[in-house]
Length: 354
Image (cartoon, rainbow, N blue to C red):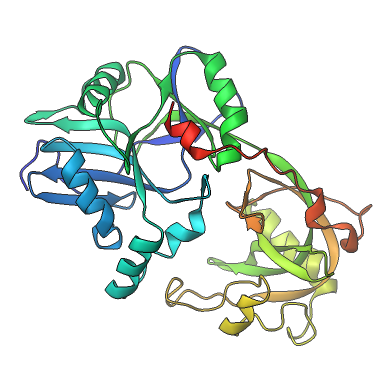
């Protein structure tokens, strides 16, 4: 492979803002695996956000992109999987599997797509120093006649259209809106774009915590919601606390601490088979490797309010939730899935159709 921009390249990133900024190019924020596709004739490589290769996990995309991308190019985009017109991140994570036979089986059952939204090189020309408007025009021209599973991400400079997308596209599983300055040069691994994400709040049960990697202070709170059977399901964590507050939380939660998880609703958390019947804190697996997943069980008697962007398959917070406040006025049994907002369903095909 001999391209003007060579792998590995870490993609350009975005920082969170509360409102859609004016005077920019706007795109939907995709909920998938960020990937940069490098094609040089018969050679094709998919690089991840960390710089590691994703190529072996998506053989169907290697074939499709080799047939659809320009002969020599570097394209920034997102690998996504859709089911029933909605993005499915769980199906995507299943593809990171050590067995090639399993990867190829899933490639047939749940094939992935690639949504292209930036161009880093075309032919012999490197485009990192070209402004966004030029890169976008070249990308749109290069992919003018493309067909699925390669898609050109819809883009607009109209903030009213962007606001409409922000409201409607969530129903197809998208995260929000990304705003890009029109004169922006491509800056790998720098947060020079802007993202506006959906934010909601929920009252959740604090049922345990994990220690911080730096020592015996709270690293993350383990959060739960009761389902319609009265079973406490693990729905995620909140973790962003100042170091002083992490130490205070250990003392604050001490009266709720259990000697062991034997009497806890999540007592079976270390049994991989138990995860098929309930959502529990993560058990050791090939994904976690040697990471310490042990946790301190608490009597599930305390409620806090957290902010979150959206739920993954209606079962857990897709990203780390953000602690807002304690809710001493709420009882744990009232913390159910029924309080969660469900976005109106929207077909992903309508998004990709522009």
